[in-house]
Figure 1 (tube, rainbow, N blue to C red):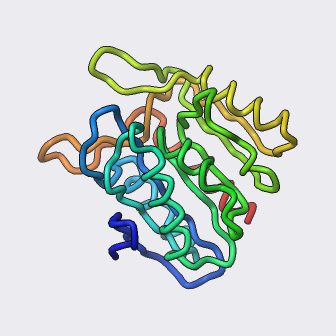
Figure 2 (cartoon, rainbow, N blue to C red; figure 1 turned 90 degrees about the vertical axis):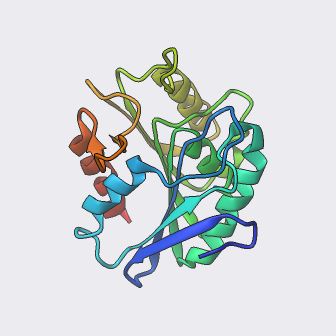
Length: 209
């Protein structure tokens, strides 16, 4: 489905009251948005367990933190289009920051950040009244030519949110890296180390709802 902002939304799953709106990561270069292999691999395992939940995957117009405001507007349009009575925002990497930026939308009750990018300049006041769950791999880090987000950055962001009265949990996965799956050329979706642990932790957040 094409959104009013020009982004795309892919909706699957049931017609229950809960919508899970999923946001991909980004990069410095201003490139056209793509679907996230991390989100796709995760949802393949969550849909059978939660058949009543509506899952919505967002494809930004441009997947770049230089266009962070555009990505946030895409996310708000996706929340509206998903139409859940309650909404859980699931953001990977930069998508975690985008989810936080869109958290003030009325239906949003929970934000789950997967290795989320929470820079010091990102306002967190929109999280008030929401639950924030951060899940991060212990081995995550940025390396030359390899994207990553330090767990220290997400932990600092989580503690900033806690200082505002936001409730939630921070979970570090030993041995996990940045993300859950990759899509190497011609190989389909390939899970990364500890992929199933990410699934269990996200499933636990859905069960809370």
